[in-house]
Image (cartoon, rainbow, N blue to C red; front, side):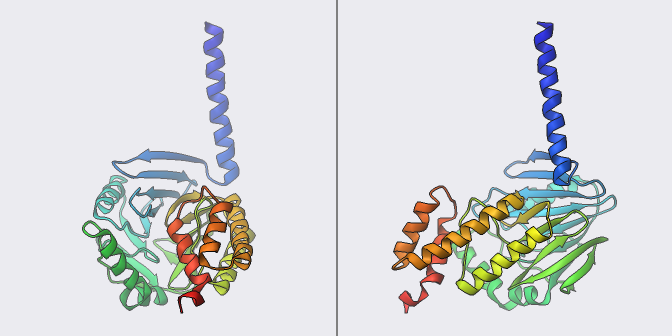
Length: 294
């Protein structure tokens, strides 16, 4: 009996040691998962900096992020639904540190849930939020989801420039990306982009967009990022980047082999039967075979 208990204890210690080793190899000290009322938060401990990744479990599977220093908090993106905003705001408040800044790029809705924190965006992202594609998309999503989807877009207090910036005492690198921008965190080798999702179809708006997406993914590999954050998925790694590159190249090949939009969709579904995001695949088909609609 004692021998059995000893074996169980040794197995538990070994499992903890293996997790600690894999976490350190990945670049962070540990990761803890916290279940909230609806959503879930993964907390990555990088030492002087902690990363909180909030998975809302809302209809769009949105994600928001928080950087925690020894003195303050810096948010990245906002939840879109009122219930998630309340849950996230409560969690952020429970950390007992002032929220000083928020970076808004692809997901600016939710109003000023962050109180007196300073909001940041690039000039292009601000334009898209106030009178461009982002504002139009939010209006369309509001019609789709109705009550509970928060359409309030807050004012932007400070403009970010491409390249090196300091926000809330944290060094960030801003990378322009169409109507939004990606956020690299050099100190912890982490980058945030709008969409990745190794097990999800991508929105690919034609050949030029595909080239840009592939270039962005190759850049992530070249920079050896530890984690890749995105708006609709749990944090991912460079292995997921490789998977996404292979997927995009396969989609290119399948598009060239397809006779029309429906044929293309059928071929991609057959090649990737377990992928989520079929609505994204339909959007890609629309872009790749746009001439059919004319």
